[in-house]
Length: 364
Ligand code: HEM
Image 1 (tube, rainbow, N blue to C red):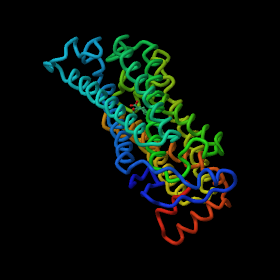
Image 2 (tube, rainbow, N blue to C red):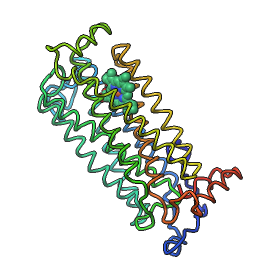
Image 3 (tube, rainbow, N blue to C red):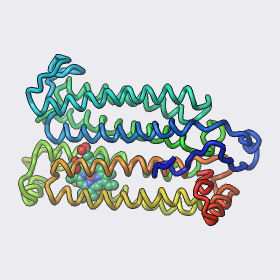
Image 4 (cartoon, rainbow, N blue to C red):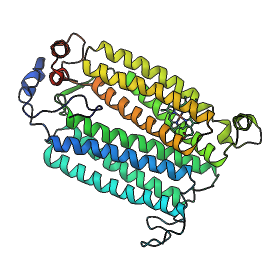
């Protein structure tokens, strides 16, 4: 699998590492890997969902959320559209592309059930993604039906939007983990893996989730109360008469620096595990933290134009997916493969030195 996010690639017939202890016997004959087509499809579903999410940001940034009136799922109460406004086109496109995402997900779950063995971990995450997709549709519908769209300034809009963003990130995580485990060579069956360093990764993931939620509130503030100059934007932040969304805008960059520092710490720790695959993914994640901070600063300086909001959200989604995959590679390992001196790690390093890129990923 060539995806940069899926370092442990599958090649039919590739050898699995012998695992130590009791697990060795049970893992000596690993079940056949899901087909390359399914692996590719699962990553395509991840990519497609990112596109749908980005279009959702366009809906918010252009104030088009009420483009279909307070109707859901029909647009303006009808199936056949007359495209009266640009807003209705933007909102309708979001609904249509989200509908396709649901169909794509149903296909993924069905294919997983057909091709992946019963105890395959990808099945668990595919089922989780199905539940989260249902939530996503429900939260999107509630935003529309409760009127939390367009120029609505009620505090409950911020509440529902935060839930929506959190659910979006969890959905992306479930999809990325489905694709990751479908693409793994080893450590993909329930009962054949162990959890290690979980608190370290969990704190990084939770902090990034909070950064995302605080970012969606900053984005809502920028959309509802646009400033026309940097000086005006700063004055808004401190003005007693300004909306609370503007008063809490500082939380997002502050949290992002704290979360960024934790993520870099996690990346350094993953290097100690001794797997070249972890090192490569860690480099991706660390670079994305830097890119996000640059984009965020540019967002503030340029007063958050729509194109930059979408780019910043793309960076956030990629960072999130990278962090989720890195955490899975680091924390969910085949039994006996956790330590830097485990047989798996030693073998992976030897393979990498011998320039066998496929084998180097074994056990990650
Ligand atoms: C780890 C780093 C960061 C992540 C993961 C992140 C993530 C996000 C997310 C998910 C949004 C919401 C986008 C939307 O709903 O459309 C957002 C918005 C925003 N972020 Fe960040 N951010 C990061 C760093 C920063 C930094 C360092 C700054 C400023 C110095 C910043 C400034 C902003 C601004 C102004 C917005 C609102 C405008 C927009 O949507 O782009 N961000 N961020």
